[in-house]
Image 1: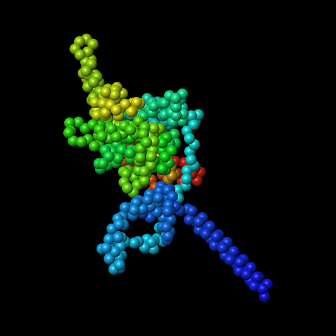
Image 2: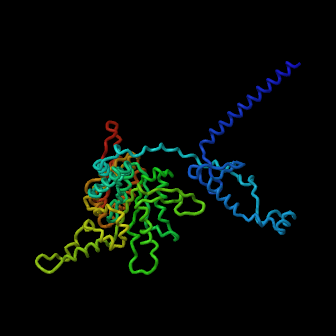
Image 3: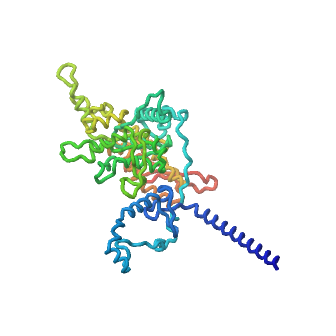
Length: 498
């Protein structure tokens, strides 16, 4: 009998072990299936990748570290001593419970969606980029060669940017050379609208594979006023680097429309979006440890802060600086005098690239404070686009506008051709608008509308040729129809449409 009992006991142990193994396997499978999702804080709704490690409560509720600490701080500030007086104790004994305290049932928080924290799929972690090695830094002439593939003209600007970026990342890689600290080479680019300031910076950041943040100075205000805080430009860079502080500290920040924070003239009101913003940006440009909000533009109680050192962040400021040419002309006209060597007063009125004569004094007179200009040592200008440059921009760059439309029609098995006369006509229309390269896209969209609408209707269309007459409104494009002859199935027959 005892032997039979022992056998039964062994059998039950085996069954329990098997059941435990199966439950362990199912739990592992659940964990594997759940690993595709990340926890989301029940209070602030931030995922685990942004908020950090979570506190797991019953009923599959997760709370991030920041929200948990803020909750505990709020609870710790409650006046528990008031509970001990007679009135509160009478309320408690009568069944009314604690005054001003309500208890939350965790089961009510689950909602209809079941598990509240398994909502966002995990982002695939990018492989950590190796630190910048001085031997791997692209030399200036190669940086310029890469920029030439995308940007037409602006030779001086591309050369200045290539050298400045090369020196900056040598500085980041080496830190100090023989105990000599190398200063940052922040840049200020000045040029008319549509000349390619933003496009140059975007192309440069893509070539260097560094995080880039493009901010607009028009929305920046002094701390405490409605608008974006000055630290929000660093917060955008941190977001572009996937909240990796080390990677963000080697990035590039491009602040566009920097001329909009110039000092307001003839006003006695507080200049919260002008000179005050310039003064607040001084510490960013120089290099300092700044506490910036993660995932938000302004600091508040529910947003965590990250400390970013801006010492190795390259700042590039750009602006059109309207009416700066008039300030330059006034300075140059002071040289005129009476006599044989006198210069005519209208000598500089017809000069196209008058901005290339800009000096620090001209920028200071425009409204930028000297401390701000001093932290932007590399100042260069971009020239306005000429008619020939417009024609080159249309067809030569790697991602030219015409190549984009040719690719779109190529998906419909239609070849798109622009003759030279059409390119020149487009450039002439763009020069009349005086908005730089931005006018090219608007003009092409206008006359390509009918073609993009009609081509998918007819499968027989094989080629479309855009002519000068079509651009100027005196004719139509040349439509080539595929021949259906059996001998030459790919032969194209020209038909000119009015």
